[in-house]
Image (cartoon, rainbow, N blue to C red):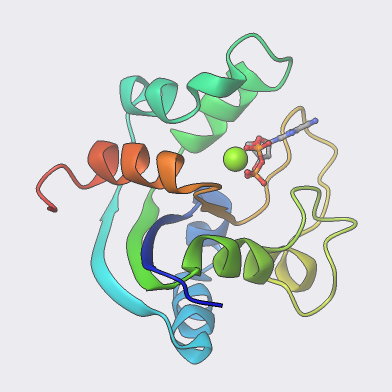
Length: 143
Ligand code: DAT
Ligand code: MG
């Protein structure tokens, strides 16, 4: 199978950042063999988050999601490697941290806290189209 180099937008969400898990997440990305292309720490504003999560507008967890994601600092990274979009999603594990498999970031480090939105440590782009859109949104200076 021949594959193309891809980039993915990874976020260590406020829950992960507060718990000091940015290093663990970046370590897993590097241990897997993906390359760090860009790295930044900041508190995202609602406007950027509304664009980032536009596909979820109207869902019951949408407002809690924006509230949670703007509640503190995040570590944002662009990573690179063949099929890294799919590969990072596999490292991250299932959206619901209760059922995310042990060995994955969400399975090892996340749990259900009984809140309106799942706090699951990381975000990773889910397709080449999302990746391009999200990298443009979070790292507008990056070609
Ligand atoms: P993912 O982050 O795995 O791509 P998603 O894009 O479907 O998942 O949803 C974005 C985030 O919203 C997700 O990381 C956690 C939260 N979320 C998703 N579905 C949810 C649900 N049914 N109840 C509560 N929170 C949810
Ligand atoms: Mg998603």
